[in-house]
Length: 243
Image 1 (cartoon, one colour):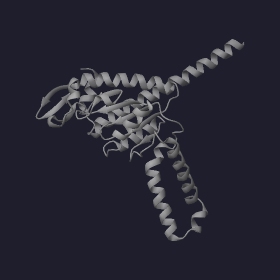
Image 2: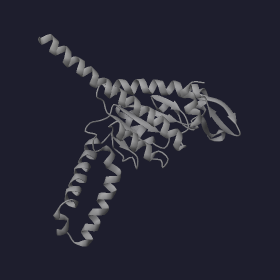
Image 3: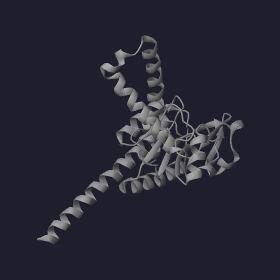
Image 4: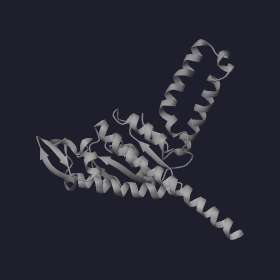
């Protein structure tokens, strides 16, 4: 058994949902049924993972943005940590309708978040009444939770990394409308036709989510590193040409 397969199995990536909850379109990705639970074919997980990693390395080496999306409780921390590690935006609390399709409005709300931050960080906050200070704090906390992860997203992403497209159906729908690619960890109750690059696997277990999201983040880091090396080589080549 390869090291990758062993790692996936140890993280429980192969455990699907109860057989009664399955989506028949997931049939090609299911290996067996055991104790009323579907077991995902780990070879299919590896295939989906390698395809997704290759794509992410390629687009990140070209400077594209990748937006990480996972708002379920088990995914939140991993989404934030891994997106920050590879320097990409993320949504891990609530998907705001129009994050992609009404991007300009979302950007203007980020301006308001920055405005609230400058008020809070200066003496200006003391010019407001206690009641107003409390209202501003409440507004700030809510906006920070919803928008902090996408404040670096100055343009539309090339791709979305999604944990559980069933839960994130609004994000999937907006991506489809705009032709934004989707890479997704999909469990046995999902429709694989709705995403471009499905990675069949357990989307409820924290260990499974953490492992898959980390591997996708690694692919983005590799792509960014490749871009740095290529630009260094190009600069060296230009210097040699000038001599």
